[in-house]
Length: 325
Ligand code: NAP
Image 1 (cartoon, rainbow, N blue to C red):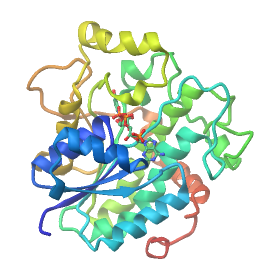
Image 2 (image 1 turned 90 degrees about the vertical axis):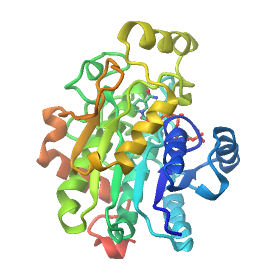
Image 3 (image 1 turned 135 degrees about the horizontal axis):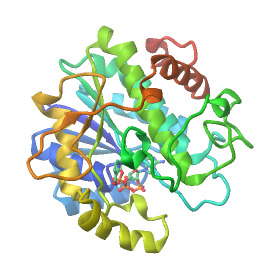
């Protein structure tokens, strides 16, 4: 019971699975928060995550009700929460029409951003009870227009505009945060940028009062995870080769998990309000560094506005933290 405990969303494959493995190997207990528990159990077995080092709990981030059920189930375990990793994501670049969540929201924003926004808020009182809590969010380079990866025109650079889609209620026919016509790949990029801004806002609002360390990270291009399974087949074949041989940005799944574990557990990562990166071109032995985001992503006024609009859409508007939990 003295093992530190981390919740990782989407730990059934890729970065989250290998993050779970790396943390379990460091002596942590990992709550694998997954929508398909059979798949998660098999993945834990195949990856060699010790039985006593993990618990499987059901979480479908695309459903706000499921997020609330998950929080209740976690509290039923009666365990201290030392860290929360917001990792799960969907990337659906070939959708012709928006797919909707149970709550009526566009599915990538609902899953990647709204579900995590509600989860982070509901679990904040639990995290705040730990001695040195951390809340770590998976960001990405393609949502950071400071970086070359954030400028690539395909599918489209992340851009949240003036949040007109959120302000309009984000239900059909609205499908984009900026309120513009639906672009499936961009919807996902936008959701990641919103998440990174959420982490900055969490830091601004709650680091002082709670002591929680809030950070995001870009683990590198983990080109072989199932994240890209809905991308065109040719892309899936070429992408890992391109990243290994041309950009040199390729990172293996075990290394990505090791990086997540560092940000969750290592003493060098106690700064709050930071985006960690190991660079785009991978250099063996390079240390992580704090990377700036674009001016729009770093704008305190924009992050606060995004927060307020999102709180309303996930049912937290005007709700004090303790009451929400
Ligand atoms: P992945 O292998 O596809 O993992 C995504 C995880 O999210 C899976 O466990 C998936 O569950 C889960 N998930 C999807 N929808 C969910 C839902 N509604 N509720 C709960 N869980 C759900 O992809 P990955 O590459 O490891 O990505 C993990 C994170 O790393 C993402 O946030 C991504 O943006 C970030 N990242 C990835 C890269 C990269 O190059 N791959 C680079 C930078 C950042 P199922 O198994 O049930 O589908």
